[in-house]
Length: 100
Image 1 (cartoon, rainbow, N blue to C red):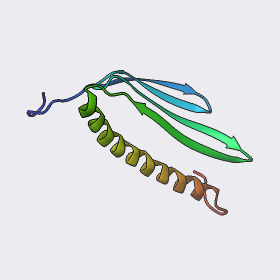
Image 2: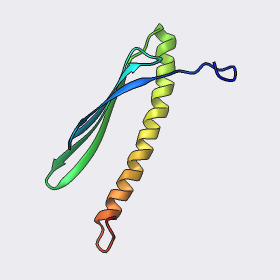
Image 3: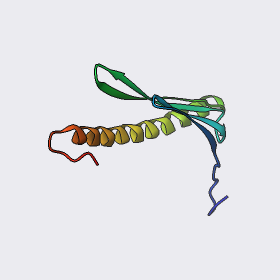
Image 4: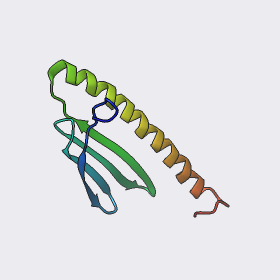
């Protein structure tokens, strides 16, 4: 407990499959399992970055309710990050833009 609140400690593994994939898997944490993957694919000179994930729950309906709330917040964070990544990637390919 920290300041009267429960805290969760998590441990994840990260797998890099360069240059195509970064995967995360929960080893220890407050839910039965979590898997996530960021994948890069190339088609006709265009690279796409895709995200997928799965969150396992326990405690029946209560766990499913909680997971829905947590997943919605996490998916919003991923969408926000992707928007920033897209903006930066597009800035770097515009003519006359430094690619630092």
